[in-house]
Length: 398
Image (cartoon, rainbow, N blue to C red; front, side, top):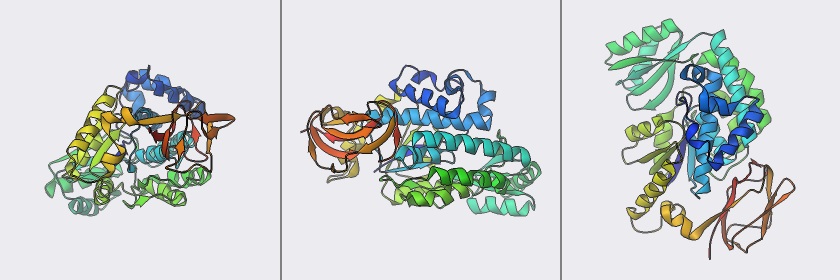
């Protein structure tokens, strides 16, 4: 099985949008700029490291960059069995699965970033990575510091992030070294994220999440809060709200995915931080990170290699992700424009359609298939706002 994972704040880097500027997926940037009322293209192309470090810029650009990569991967016909995202990346995962529309995702990420930025100024704090110490010992270090400091991220074995007041983080770092930590590394952030210091942001974001009204999805998303797979939209209002001031249980998310049968982890977005964490956490994991258009060919080769080395018998990888063979037997139906998608209710998976068959509507535009074949599944969900040429459905040719 295949899982898509999406990075969080801290993975952004200057010029990360340049490789995508001439790619078809770049059209998402103009839409994001309009919704956010920000020049996202300039941030992706020209902003320096200091400007991108601002929480409000870091979250928006990482979110949009990850969706650029996702859009390109979907154009190849690659679909996951599960999705997950680290902190901010959870919003990307929910947008990827259709729980949130693209416009809803952009607006929520902007609201989240603004709220966390303001909370960071209201309750000044910092974060530090503790390396080479067991999870429980890091928690002991926080308690022994006897100050405002908590575990914020369980990233991977021997890699835990603590957060709180500058004095509290410093005190916990001293204790952690006494307990055997190999290194305590300060992080360049503007607040103590995923701790009680974010309570003001949680209160502010709760209403915005409820208004977004996340939808049910076919592809489950594993939550940072409880490390469980969720496909019911109603559950995400409380989960996303709790995420702001609760630790990110990323290590547990990876283990949960592995227990669900996931063997292949594809990181979509800037950097390769999550790929390293997956390697450290899941011993048998196959991993790859995709951040540029040039990586897309590597993805197809990697998927194909997975099918040729898989054990005999049917498997989700062999059935849905055939690497280079995708172009031989599978086709995508894409949106003719931007708007809200509504499928034809009488069409079900497995039905045979011909060239020109109307499979749904995007606004006032008919979505017609340019191919004949067997409908495998809809990629977009009813009520989702889609962009021009966004994949709507995929079918297997006869």
